[in-house]
Amino acid sequence: MSTTGLPTQIWLTLLLSGGLAGLAGVCKVLGPNSQLRPSISPGYGYTAIIAAFIGRLNPLGIILSSLLMAVLYVGGELVQIKLGLPFALAGMFQVILLFFLLAADILIYNRLRVR
Image 1 (cartoon, rainbow, N blue to C red):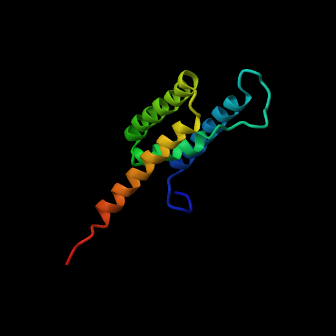
Image 2: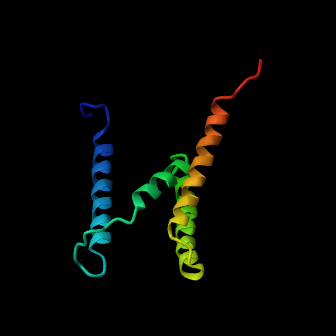
Image 3: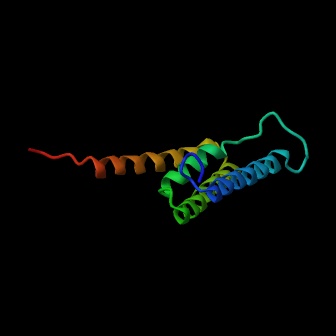
């Protein structure tokens, strides 16, 4: 047992998964040109936060919500190309989805009662 109460296997798993995630990030950043660029992140981290919240931190739910977010992202690119609308429209759909989910949580967990 370690000092925090977590077994050694859990710590090793956390370190290994973090290292693999870092390696995947390096591969993404280096990309096909094999060089670093000044603008490396198109905002995938914010999309991942929304996907994790929509998936309710459940592994299967996160996979399904990630697919939904990917469809919104690719659909936004397609709308930009075909219709000439701004790409920020896809981000607006993601934010609207998150706000409606937050509003539903607030209304469910904090019921207003009329006396």
